Image (cartoon, rainbow, N blue to C red; front, side):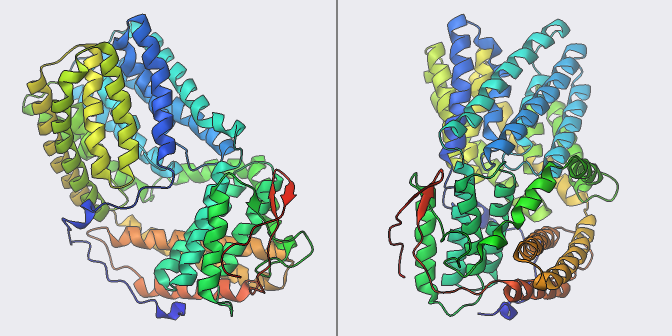
Length: 578
């Protein structure tokens, strides 16, 4: 099917679905990684504090332990830097909250500071594209600390506990590099091959966009992975195969789709990585080996100090005037403040959960924010019932309380990839049980406050999202259109260049198409939006994919590939139909 079959989309941003946001999906293929990581990172400090008889300090170590939820899709070199940044950001937010709590007991001031911190954390996570769980964990920790009893002299020791627990989380998340150094890259390439297989088996605009996004993500993962290794070289060539496989060819699509899925399965496993023939020959999809090494120039550019300074300047500009991220940050500020003040007015002494509820709602646009509002509300209300059921068990012994928190931490990450509301069912009792480490609280008071905070936080949060407009989203689409046109022109000019230059131009065009689709989808879900250039977006996507097809190597006869791991070559098994 040609990309000419793509039809203009006519989104209805005012349509508010009730059932679709609550449907369960398939779990992530790596759900167990953050789940096991957060349990391991939490167990070490919590069991240590249990042995010392100081479980009242768990709130400070948990701040560092929760950093283990971040960065699991990143290669280990990038993950190490990212997690270090997350630990520092967590400590900074917690420090600001603790100092504020030690200087004032005014609920009005505490709510204002909590809302401001939530807005800053939201803007920072969006600008850096840190990925799930985003700003919610940072906001949860800082908001809870605002309403915890605190003296100024205690702050340094408490922040030291956070940094120590953060160091444990860093080791837990980066340590697997000693066992399987290229694990994240293998998973990213496997996803690209699987998406390419879906494209071949079911040609259409949806699968084409998904394949382009998966291929782009795999290239970005390989670029950030550090110095090349034999396995990474093999993975680079396999990504190029996935990229070429989505272009029209004479090969039977069913056979090629089966072959790609077989390759993806081998890459996900612990065995050797399947690779194409050696340099100088034509690969299984007719791609010259020399074409792939255009990635080396990009990898070197990423290490260039000038390039890094330019990236930092671009990050600052993304938060400056005219940025589409600012209206979302303003929504977070207003919604969190409104939720906190409403709860305080109704007699909730520590309305931090209302702030967290409101902060957790804000997604890329109003439509997605509505979906999250339904998910969060349902999950929290069901989670309160779960908390009421397990509270007697958690109070039987301190160890029982620790084990309950570890269990719900694991359950939250195991369930949240199915649907956010399902994960919230486990998050809510875990968050309530954390309060038990300090001192037991009346169950009725905890449950009542949490229900009130959830309902008011959701209402206030969505109201702010609906009223604070984001007309800058359309401007992002226009900039993405210009960038796509420029990238397409460059790719066409590069058709006569050496393979490495051609490959770099094609990757840049793919990245611009992914950004264009993301910008268009985001703007389509915004309310009070000026008319969007839907036809221009459609035409730009069609032209971009035609250019990618025209500049791609045509697939040749499938060849059986050898396999390698850490530079060792062994015969490859037959993969799918050939």
